[in-house]
Image (cartoon, rainbow, N blue to C red):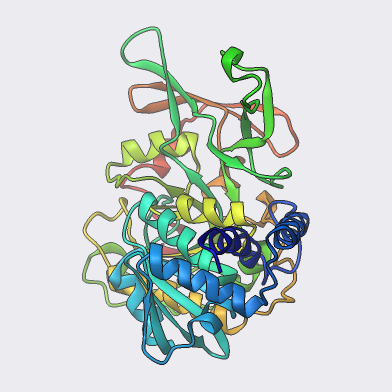
Length: 445
């Protein structure tokens, strides 16, 4: 076969393969997207006299990966079967987070694509693929793109640790990302003097999609597409293109969220929570909340208050938005699962391994109980699905419209309520108490 035919097959078949295990419409009109890609493939197949079977098409993709993506794999592994079999994909950022998931796997082999080591095997009776992306958004985005593009992913999970961004959520809890926000996406506005200013979301992340993303907060749309016929006179453009959408939060799969909520965590030693020498235990909770993703690590409570006023998050980490962004674009059901390892309200404690194990146990539970007929698998989580103890549910919003500050103290928060009304909220004593070292969750009293 000619090189050009191989490349054409890979380019189109990969796009179709990504949806091969997807049973319906999720965040985009994915069934129609797959049908469109298949039609294009059929047309090009006819034009180029391509008569390859699915197995031959995968073999062409393997050839492409070998030549251009430094593909290698365990001896004896049937690579075309490994890539074509529908699997649950699992991403972790750190080795500490990967270890407990890997120890639960029946590993059949390894596949290395462009330096990323993908372990393939099963958990329970379910085929899975596991990869450590490395830390921060860009690493997670790259690993997720490779996984989703070259393996047949039917659902994706991000498992690992995070810091609490909610005084009611402590070490030993697990936060499920019903939503994820990029809390670093901020427009800082000048005020009357150097201490008075305001913030708004910086439009959100721009994602190319085919229809609207239900339950996501849309911050705007991109410019109308430039084409050869208008390029020389384009200037500032000719309006908007709604297929380029700015979103300020991304919703997870409601079905995966419901499934994960069924896991019962063991009680956690109070000494793990506080960093003290207590000998009692307290309840641990699986919380459906908001993941605040950014390449940041925030410790001072004054800064925590400042950040949460605009983006009401419950757990802070560095990879979630990149992971969610890729899966949302490809229409793959996803969920972020974060064990809480530390809390700025208790600065003397860090339990990374305990938190990684907690997240892994929830992840393993989801895999073992997964079904492609899972109710709501292809539906998006909504605001009503947030746990009552989440910051967003407590305060009535996920992303504010605008926040006014005096120094680091929020003085006014403007947000859109779930009924569509605009609310002006003036943080006072209760807000300040939540973001103080004097705050004690009710279940610890």
